[in-house]
Image (cartoon, rainbow, N blue to C red; front, side, top):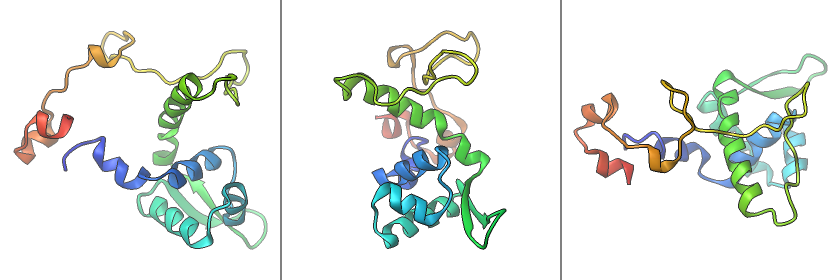
Length: 151
């Protein structure tokens, strides 16, 4: 389906994949570290790691020290960080009645990191009410309408 929301869901379609990425951003790099942090079965963890490698979100490489292999985020993987922060913002707002369990602060100042949506031309902050889906080049090539993929 030519939809840039649906396509990534093939990769991120379960909680384990997003949790692996969360822990990768926190500095976990080894298989046993992910397994310990997540409490996930070895086969399920390997499946999710393999999928992230296949989609070039993680790369598997020899550790700088020792005979271990590490899973490292690629640039494509680092570009997922705002997605995790958006999920965290929503979770803090609607699912953390006692307040945020973790603060993500800007290194070097007292500010807190938050995801945002803004216009790439005027810089105005946007909400869903401000955005209108229109056909893009990938949709025009597919022959489908915006309504078939945007709803």
